[in-house]
Image (cartoon, rainbow, N blue to C red; front, top):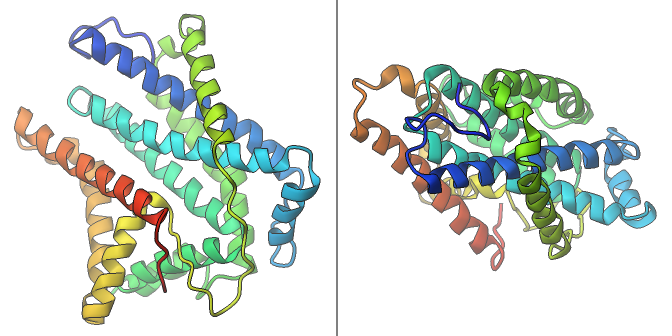
Amino acid sequence: MIPVFTIRDKNILSSKIEIYLYRIINSFILSSLILLFLTGILIAMWYYPTEEMAYYSILFIRNNVYFGDTLLIIHRISSDILIIATILHILLTIRRCNTGSWLSGILMFYVLILFIFTGYLMRWDYVGYTSVKIASNILRDLPFIGEYLKKILLFGDDISSITLLRYYVLHVLILPAILAYLFKRHISEEFLKLEENLGLILISMGIILNLSLLYTYEEPIEIQEGKDIVKPYWLFLWLYYIDYKIGNVNPDFNFIPGLILIALAIYILIFPYIKKRNTKYSYLSLFLILLILFVLSILSLLISFNTTSTT
């Protein structure tokens, strides 16, 4: 396996610059995970995963818990940094990762996406509710299996208190256990030598905390009809825009965004098995796909700061 921090094999990373980038990116990954774990525990102390109390428990944390607003902001910023750092980690090691490390790493990334998805609904406000609803509708439009996928995603025909409760269980119990298992399979023993990288970890953690000071937690909006604010998670905002535009032109083709998403997820996961030969061109094609998706996500994030979308 590829060591997470200390790189001694010159065949893994070819230059000192790559090694330093690798260490920096992974220090951000570890720092984000630590902050998410700590803030998540504190937030869970006041969170109630019920339809009646979920929204108001978030308000209570913001308004009545000391530094509650800061806790929520750090939790949000850490999750964004974790996703960005993980994508950069994949782009940096895409040509040098063996099959086992690739599978565990990509599965970890998909688990992180599920963390974001379940966490969005746990806010139980209008933005979180509609974001999950839009995602389920994108899957619903897939031919033949769409309705089944939606029921699996929502644990029923539509979003309900059961969905919220089961997303909470996934978020705080099942997904952390799966992530810990994959993380253990993905890393090497070099990861345990934190004394060599403690400085980087502390610096990256300080950067994340300082970024949190620049962020203002968005005012939650109660779930109700008639609102025009829709903000899916930035990583998939581009996909929502595609779905929205296709729906305006011809709703019969609304299955395309869901098909793109599933095809990409499967292609990226099984890439080591489907490449015909180990050439730089096969790796370059996947690198470009991931890079384009990442750029589209960042552009969508920047656009979302200045515009609002309608359902």
